[in-house]
Image (tube, rainbow, N blue to C red):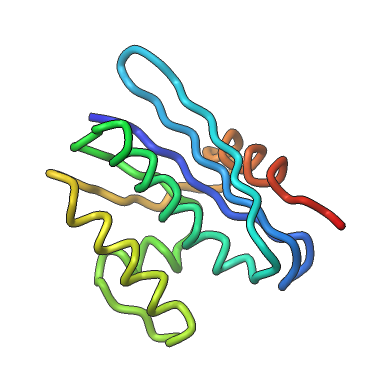
Length: 128
């Protein structure tokens, strides 16, 4: 099983944003920093999930355990429902990607256990 840690960050809320993805396989680790446009921190969290799923699909990973420090994203993915309609298209995109995997789990973890993804997300923020 592939272990994926994700985080989104914004410089301001909203503001320039970034997504961090840290993937651990049995043999290797992969680190990704994705610059994102001006958005809220919650939107950046969803984009981090989407980017992670795209990477996993691209690399042929089929069984994924995802860790996030965003309760909002974890709950939305678990229930496949989002109260705030602003996030509905992002959840829909994530679910379409999740459905391409054989097995997908998502679990909330405390911020202190998600430091690597946090650093990657912050590194991705492009300040103008």
